[in-house]
Each structure stands twice: as structure tokens, then as C-alpha cells.
Length: 490
Image 1: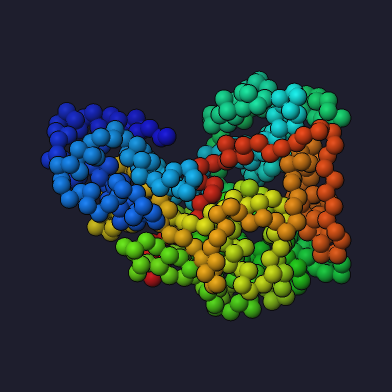
Image 2: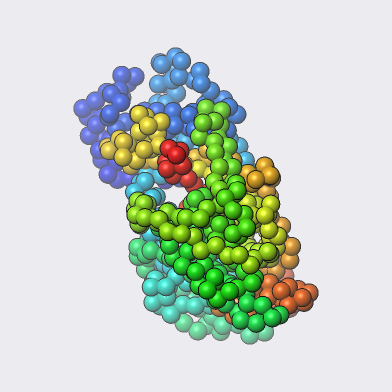
């Protein structure tokens, strides 16, 4: 749970010295009651499950004294916000609140303080209680890449503490620190040999989600395009479109879309990607968004498109360009993991009425709902950043809509189960670079194109190998599906 920032706390102490915190607070003051009032009213208006939460009942603020006492009962905006979630952690696993929406909006465009890598934890031995981390991904021009860290590298200790199941939570939390020391090892027949120690410090980086593209020229006589796409970030729409210009010019006949690290992002960008993949869909409906009963006017749809919007790193539209739409793709291969969520799952669900989609990897996360950012701007029904109360930076990202495909299908809260199951983490000691023809998950897709049966040969060096708590290794905003006020105002 986030705490009120030092700046906020200092200002709050000053405001208490000059103003009363009773039921007559001026709406422009910074008091817990006033921010709590923003939280309640924004959730009462927009929350997807508003009618299922008794404390969000429309009659809650009928008696102003009782309502103020209710607001004053919560010491922080976080407390009241999380108290209002519908079956928190089960039904609503997704809504959250932040105390700095400037940082939030930057994170949506891939700008954040980071080491620049993604890790996977694997429990490799029940008897020895041994956890290792392997590197799934390294961002270019990041602290991790500058330190020479590569995909497939194996880490067994953080700040000198060897990872075990019993100390995992406490030890893995070191990755939240600004600086961490990593102990790297090699493995041979169950024997670990230390190889290096590297200390890295997080810095602000901007990650291009269009991470890797390649064309395999002759897979069963076909040209096969392969794209590693790691987030639906609108400020990189033109880079995504350029990747498809490359595929189109190469005349690919099959496409393998690697979304193993893609937790989602912009719904609009998801519609653009779908448009790039399937030109035959024309301008039909890709996705339908249903809001609560107070916002049925906002319910609408995204269609397949022939043009896309270009945005800068602030999310401001700067232009348009024609979408490079493929015309030869009748079957889409999607590589998935438990990190594949929201806008990524939209691609699978939204394209299924139009082309065959074959999922390879492990079951996806299961998120069929999305959010908008709500600011303390009552005059805009809490949707306008420019009209927000400038005295604080609190904002909410609650679930406000459910998403459906053209056929009104939306039941994937348990995730999409792969057509071909390949558990990358079982190959933790032989992880290959993205684009290597023998990389285990990609190979399964290429073998299917070749007409070969996918055969998993699980590493036998340890008797029991299981994925371990990947969610603790991911950033807060990794699994997001959001729309902007542009959709609401169209």
C-alpha cells in the first residue's frame, strides 16, 4: 500500500494548522476528507461493480454528516479506495490508486525507473529448497544491458542472500531497492559454479516495446515473420507499424507474435495491431466495451482500421499514418505465458471471429476488463488531467469496463489455455535468445508450421521444476488495459 508522500504530509500538517478538518472543509483544501471524497465520488460514478459494493450505493452521501464521518474514518486515500473494491484480490485483482499520476502516465509510455530486465523465478528442487532466477529479457541501453546481462543468465542470490523458498518474499523485495547486487552462476548436472557478481542501479529508461523482429525465409517453404512485442504503448504506434511494413515488404505468409512478456496497455493500440495482422477484416468490429449503467453512453467499440494515430511520449497526438495491413495471414501463432494479459488477450479474443489463432506456451493471465485514469476533476466527471486539482497528484485506475469481441465473447477470466503447451521455465538452464530457431517456445510454433508434432523434452537434471511467484517480479503497471478520454469524447 502506498503511503502519502513526504511533500503531501508536510503540506497536510500546514493545512491542519490553518484549517479545521471538520465537516465544513473547503473543497479546494488538501485534507484526507477531500481526497477521500474524490475517491468515493469517482468510484461511485465509474466503477464497473458499483452496484455490487454497498458503500458505493448512491444513497451513501444523502446524509452529509454521516457521509463526512464515513470519509473521515479513513486516514489515507489508499485505505478508502481498497475498501471499495469488489471482492478484492479475486474478482477485482486489477484496480489501484497512485499518489503521482505524472509518473503513472509516463509509465504507460514505457518511461520508468528500472534495472531494465525481467526475471523468472523457478523452484528447481523440493529437497534442497532452492530457487533460482533466470533472465527473461534485457532492455537495450539499460543498467542491465550496460552490465552485460543477457537473456538466459542465471541468478541465485541478491545482495549476497541465496534464494530459497523460505526466504523468497523477503529476498526478492530487494529488487525494489534502487541498487541491488546480483550473483550469477552457471549450472552443469545440478552443480552450480559462481561466475560473476554485478551491482546495478535503477535509472529512468524508455523501453521500445517493439523489441525484436525477424523473417525466417524457408520454414516448410514459407516465409515466416516473428515479432517480440512487449507492451501496447501508444507512443510507439509508428514503430509497430514500421515492423509490419518490413513484414509486408518481405511477403511473409505466416506470423508468430511473441506476447510472452506483454501485459497489455492501450486498447486503441491493440486494435491497430489487429488491423495490421488481418486486412481481410476490413473495418468490422474488433472489440466492444461495456460500461456500468451510469455510463452506457460511453459504451462503444473499436473497429479494424486503415489508419493509426501517432503520439509523442506525453501521449499527445502528433499525426496519422496508413496502417501496413498484411493480406496473406490466415493463421496467427501467439506465444504466451502467465504474463500475457489484458490488451494482449484482446488480440487473441478479438481476432478469433476472423482468423484462426493458435496459442503456444502457457495459460494467459485472464483479464477481460479495463480501466481509465480518474483525476480529482469533478467538473469533467473525474476524467480530465488538465482540470485536476493541482494541489495533489492522486489518481485512480479502477476497472470501468468489460471487453467483448464481435461475437460478444468475453469469458476468459481463467486465461486462454494454449493449443500447444510449452513451459519455458522447465528449460531454465538452456534459455536461448529471442529469434533463435531452437528457442523452445518459438521452436514449437516453427515445428507446427513444418507439420511436425510438438515434442517437449523436459530437462531431467532436477526431478521437480515449477514456476514460482512471477507476479512478485513484475512492475505494478505491467498488466494494464486502458483507454484515454479520446475514446470517451469521440
